[in-house]
Image (cartoon, rainbow, N blue to C red; front, side):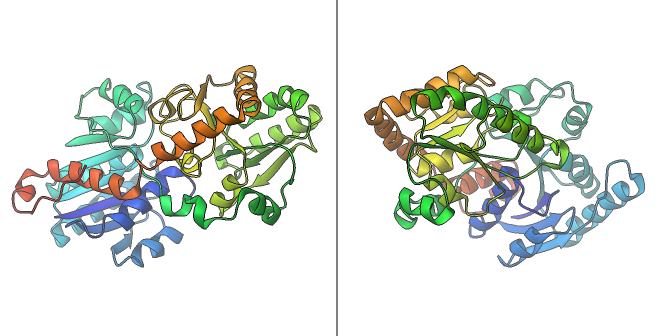
Length: 382
C-alpha cells in the first residue's frame, strides 16, 4: 500500500511535528510505502529523507494566495497519480483543505489527523470537515466527541500518540542530582518544572501564581519554565517575566527558554506540572511519567485520559493557582504518596510507545482502503 503523507510544517515546534516524525520512523517496516510531502522547506525534510523515505517539498504559501493554493492542489494530485498512490493522509485540518482536494482530483480516498479539540464555530475547521474524507482520526476522546458534532459527520477513529520511551528511560539518563548540576540548576530544595511553548493557554502563569503559596511552606523551592517564544503570542514571555518580577520571585523561578535536551531537564525535576487549558492530548505528560515523576495536569481534555487522579498523577482545574499550589504541596508533604504515584505513572507511560501508536494508525489507514487490505498480509497488533 502506498500512502502519501502531507505535512504542513518542516520544523519541530511541538507535539504534532513529533508525532509525524514518530510515524515516519516507526512505520517504515509495516508494509506501507510512504511518500512524504512537506508544504514548506525545513530541517524535517532532510530528516525524513534520511530515513529512506521518498520526501518532497511542494511549497503552498498562505491560503489567501489563491494561485499558489490551486497550483499546490494540482501538483499533489499529479504526484499521486504518477506514483500510483492508494491514499492521501493529511496532517492537521489545515492540510486537508489542500490534500483532500488533491485526493478528489486524483480519485483517491483521503484521511486526516485532527490534532486538536476542534471548535465547531471555526469556519476553517468546518471547511476542512466538508471536504470528503474516509475518516477523521482523533487523538483524544474529547477531540473525537467534538469532531463528531461537526457536519458533515465523518467516522472519527481514535489513535493515541506515542512517546519515544527510549529517550525517557531513567536508567540511561543522569540522576536527578547529576542533571541539576549539569544544567546549572539549584542543588537543594524541591524543583517544580513545566515544559511547553510560551502561550497563555499552556498555563505557565498559573505555576508562577502558585509559587508564593508553595514557598511559604518550602522556602528553598524553585520552579523552572522550559519553552520558547511562540510567534502568535510573542508578548507572553515578557508578561511572564514581569509577573515573576512583580511577585518578587526572580530568585525562585528560572526561565530556561527553549531546550533540546528535554529528558535531562525533566529528569532534574521533583514535580512536573502541565497546566494547559483543554490540552488536546499532552505528550509531554507521558514523557514526564515515563521518567517516574509525580505529575500534575489539567482536569480537562486529554490529560484526563492519561491520568487517573490520585493513582498515577493529580488533576487540577485550569487557571486555578490555589488548586495547583495545593497539589504541589500534597506531593511535598507526602513523599511516600508521591513515590507511589510516580511508580504508577511510569507503568502507565509504558502503554504509549511510538511503535504502538504507528501500528494503530497504520491499522486505521488499512481499514479505510479495503481493496488494498484484501491483497496484503495482516499485521495487526494490539
